[in-house]
Length: 239
Length: 256
Image 1 (tube, rainbow over the protein chains, first blue to last red):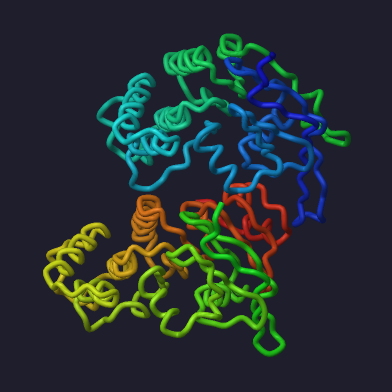
Image 2 (cartoon, rainbow over the protein chains, first blue to last red):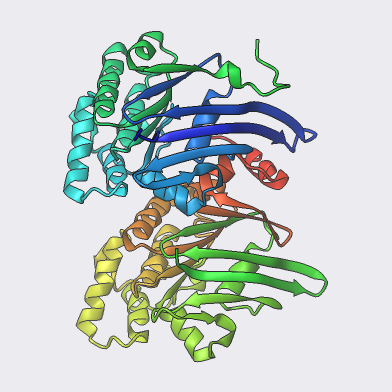
């Protein structure tokens, strides 16, 4: 019996309708289809503005799906994100899929350590192991210990991004969605993220992501999917 | 998924004007639902209909009582409705003066809700009140001061303590941060966020502030002219709005 993929995207389409601009219709993506298996890192490639981030956002339930399916399988359960209820998506975000965006959305007053520990707790870890998990990730990502108990609002861009990455990884999710996680990081910290990805892959996690840095992409990608093949008819590509 | 509160086709008119038009949705235990829209969109009317303070012209609101039975709010006696409002529900008003007894001490304001559900031991009530003052970040040494001596932010936090002391399952909030300074708002929002998560509260939150909705809610209901024009997961509605009116609302916010 072959293992079913963790993520299976079929004939996915995305269209933006700009109601405030004469209801202009912007077709972005059409017939997007691919699978991501456990232990595999699939990277979306192609120029900016072709809809790579939109695909990740649809998988995470953050963007609405025009048509098609996004099947997320976990043990014997399969959910289609395209039609899932908000409550189902919230539950999947807690237990099945983690997302790292390019920027940290700061919560006022909460310390870096607690932001990360809360993500671990949401995924079902107990208080003690959540704190441990947060400490482990902070030190692996080279965040100086003096910052751990401070809210990240005043941190540098690179420090905030490492908090963001630690939060995304805190839940040990079987599917990780990464949108340029290393964009604002130096070589040392990029390498730390690459090591984290390799470790989670070895543990069976599936990854889907965007990495513009060629060196990072070469190391982490098992497969690169060229997004241009999914451009919607009528889509105007940015020069 | 068991719904704590279910609205089915509720409609309310004021003369020819429609305040709410056949609105249906459910709120689950522990779920935070934000109702957003501009002034006059029917948000506050909807909140009053959901909490049984206004009777709908059509439709029903069902609430799952602690015994597990769903009851139509219209079928409750006035006594039952008041008991529900005093014990299982909380109301956080925009203006704390509408909810607090301004001539009664902070401790008295909290203790009153406990006495309403039968607590009689003065020492226990005072200890619980003091504990709740600390939880909402008010120095328990100020337990005997009246809310008139408190700042706007403190009054709002006292109102929250008064509401949560009876461990309600559902809290209605009407613009809870309206009228507060921005710095005070952030503190209050963070406090509400952590209390709601710790206590597993269901919240129905009316706000015109999309940032408040994003920070606190799981799901959003967008209202315009008494109708629900869009509903969905909070970040989906705010990041990829589908309805023309939601696109207008989202694009009208100035980025800080």
